[in-house]
Amino acid sequence: MISIRLLVIFLFTGFHASSSALSIEQYKNQYALLPCTGLEARIISFDKKISMRLSNSSKKERSKLKREYKALNTLYKQKNCHKKTPR
Image (cartoon, rainbow, N blue to C red; front, side, top):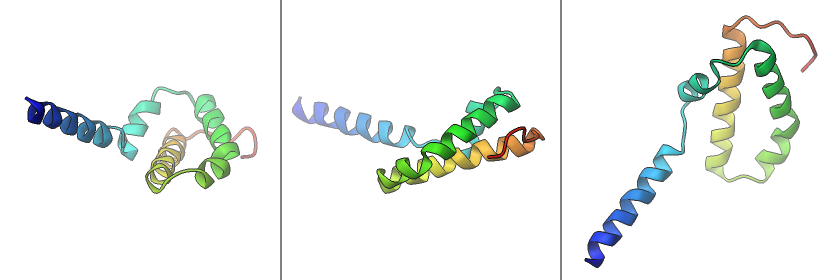
């Protein structure tokens, strides 16, 4: 009985750890409905916080942040958004 419980716990933690890491395509799907102004606001906010977030994060978190940032910029370019304010 204990071994079944341990197996369930290990499977749950393994699945949770693997499911929390999103790919660039998944981030693009997540932000696909945002208009250009929303993407621009998100990127500007990301730029302001990125140095603090990168300095206090683990290696996994850094790669996650970089994928999210790359997905935002890729979507911004794909939608042919024009910069209204300097970033």
